Image: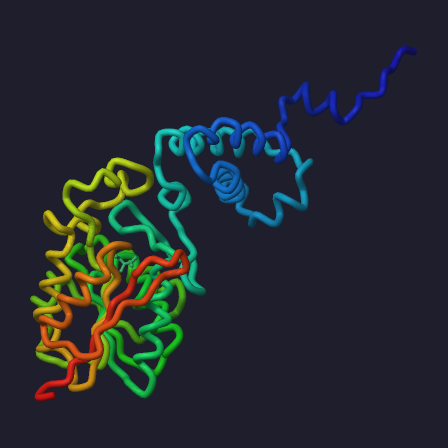
Length: 296
Ligand code: GLN
């Protein structure tokens, strides 16, 4: 009898089954001219399709990927090659300690914003009420509410779609101390004062060429752009915040890497004391804050 043993390799090739390693190599090679994070993008997308984490991919590089999953992965890869952000393809992004749902109705949370969370946590020491203006996915409000279950958080957004995402994120993480309100900045707020107000508002200049590059091309323009100089919303928030702050309360704002001096100037002009700007991990001024001290 002439029975030839069929090797694993032959079997795999005859079935056109691709391994984790091969799929990652194929995708990384295609992505490398389109994305600065080609390998990471490929890993995140494949792990998502396989419903595994990235560590699993390193542990089982020879594992075969079934054709249905491979086709699904290649479909996402195609969209990534067209520029679609990874977070919109997987529908999620890690922020602080939370895995957040993200949709094209919301900005994708950025690591820089964790500096705003850290600084707000300091300002919230011994305090109990917080307002997050323009909450998007709920990133800031939920990170702070999860760290401080004893405080009352109000999260606003002008977009009802974004608020629905924030509420779902709160449900997913069992965070109950946040109230949601559809509001154009302060417009729909009931008369109430807060110990701390935070916001990561839109702050990009309308004509900024960065708007034509990378992930931001797919993010909601209303969450990104704020007038010709990028500071329209920051001016509005700084001007009105004193009416909503307790005496001694703080306003903290995220802004563009080159806006620190101007935002500190805006805070001082609006009457805030102890106004100051903090650099992010890349060394760019990123967060500015000031204290409301009436009659001081
Ligand atoms: N507060 C949200 C975040 O930081 C949304 C910010 C925005 O849409 N400008 O992710």
